[in-house]
Length: 200
Image (cartoon, rainbow, N blue to C red; front, top):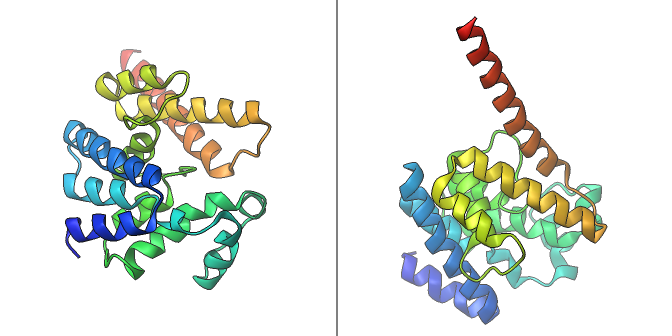
């Protein structure tokens, strides 16, 4: 399926606002891919299709995940919308003919993140947060980081913002989000320790 065919299929299946969001994420992901030397085509396709499983209703997410043999934890059972990421990772193969495991993984991780995220995973996660249609307190600062900060500094700020937002809403925090944030912090601490040793 060509990119244009993917767009046409996606447009038929998503609400207009969700489709516009998907186009915005694709465009933002390409900009970030250029900045960080990632594959622009992978970024474009993953950005475009990241929310492809939002065609399913929230109340059908568990059933759709079970149908595809996706593992469902307690957090996902109580917040089924989270499953759209894992379902989307399979859906891109089923419907859009995307066989690239890097794209599937970036789609699977675009909502809650996870440990050992690749550059593409991080780009799609962040592009989803800062695409032009997003409007929430702090988004302009996050967009500025997207232009100036390192990829891990951006992601750390984004994950921290996301966790605070979820805590303030009184919702559950997915363990994968905590793992992703802690991993960046631990890597930064190790880098500082290694630098300090060099200076000794």
